[in-house]
Amino acid sequence: NHTPMPNGTGLMGHESTTHSAIVIPKPGSNTIYYVFTADADENNYVGGYRFSEIDMSLNGGLGDITAVKNVLLFAPCTEKLTAASHANGIDIWVITKELGNHVFRSYKVTCNGIDMNPVISTVDPISGSVAGYRGGCIKVSPDGTKIASARFLEGKWDLFKFNDATGVVSDRIMITQPGAITLYGVEFSPNSRL
Image 1 (cartoon, rainbow, N blue to C red):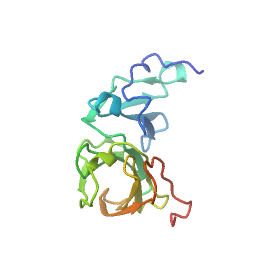
Image 2: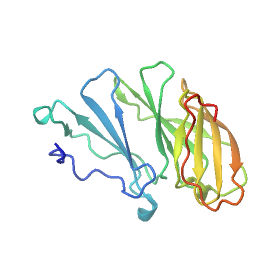
Image 3: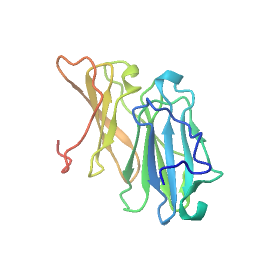
Image 4: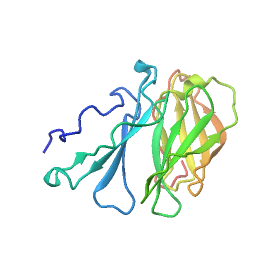
């Protein structure tokens, strides 16, 4: 109805974050969804990554946020937030990036909810600062085997391998765009080759 759900205001995140929010359906449910949010540079990322639960059976079928609201995954965060299907075709990975280092966290979402013990991946450092990891898009390829991430203030992209069965991010390759000062967006072709 284009109106806020009764408990739907006050969700954390930030309107200027690269990936301010993503919505993930709870596997095995027709009514439960999770909203994941990320804070922004304007707040020094202190609000972190959080999630809230939507139950579409509430509010006469119009849905509402349950008592599971703004639950902290970790802080501080970056603006990198994406999701990918699990290799089993049922579960979902929510992939985040720590601030100031080369660490990714992959959270598994199953029919039991969100596993609060993420898969931790530390990728090999390559020349360039970790500052480029703060903003800019991050995407998983349609076939679930790669992740592309813009290094916003450096004119570079990172390309990683992603294991959609284990949630591990690995094998970074840095790609430089000659003459670019900033890069923000990333996308894969439908066949995941480009």
